[in-house]
Length: 392
Image 1 (cartoon, rainbow, N blue to C red):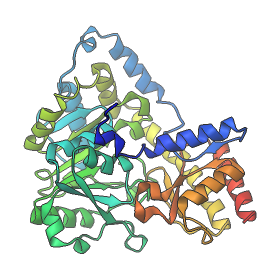
Image 2 (cartoon, rainbow, N blue to C red):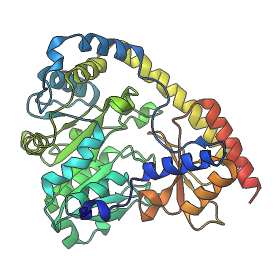
Image 3 (cartoon, rainbow, N blue to C red):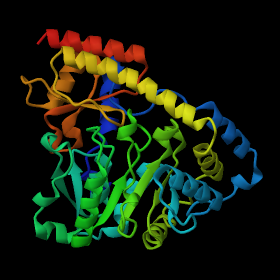
């Protein structure tokens, strides 16, 4: 069987491998607790499900959808964007529905990359960024995110010729896996840098609504003057309303860039089920949405405090997450490999966390803990981590 190099030369997806290792451990009789994957454990809120029930019964929603997104979906997203970020968007030209944010992440590189081209990607970073560049025939150039810089890229460290030849840069703030938050000044510098080097910015803002303090409320790159003409920002309903299985997101950008993405996407799929589009967009302005967001924030703050207290007691080096679902933690000094550390933790205590190297070479000295498990599982997981450390 003659398979393409896209398949034969691409490593299996990180979280698929983790899931396989979890299943194998369970088959060996190990009682496993997983704190590895960022899938919210709480259900989609009832008010969203009620909206979906209404939309499911509307006959107009059971035809082929618009490739770009239904007009009322785009109008409601534009209204939310203005209220949330203070940015005016042309609903019919500057917004496009996607089949979740990963749909945008994995397909946008095809808009810009021809075989042999290069693109900049932060390291560590969501593994799908590099994979998508490779699938499009390009070569990713990694830009390290260092702890001493607050896990923000040092743009001045990128050689001029590399920046000039790159097609785009992937960024993600609030960041997975480091939980770092970028300030307005960073986005201003990034937009100026992109203008200088003729780069497009692909800004993954999937965690825009997952933060813990008002002062850490994430911004949109679209708030920066001139950003819209050279940026595409990616949003997701998965984290905002615990809708991971629904597969609904959107991108915002200039008319020209949206049209370019639409040209590609209309040849790949037939759009998002209209009932999901309309239910998701109506949820943005639903009167129950603020209460849900506050309750979720309080839930994750409690989980954050449980994990932080355990890590502090054990002497781990980490930063307290300001946003997203994750802790980015230094592996113990006696380990030189995040994979070996995570494998030992699974075998000896049945606790699954994510090796940092899975997000890129700069993550080798770290592991990631996700807060998307029930409180009792998190508490048990921290007890297992304590027992593991006692045995070292």
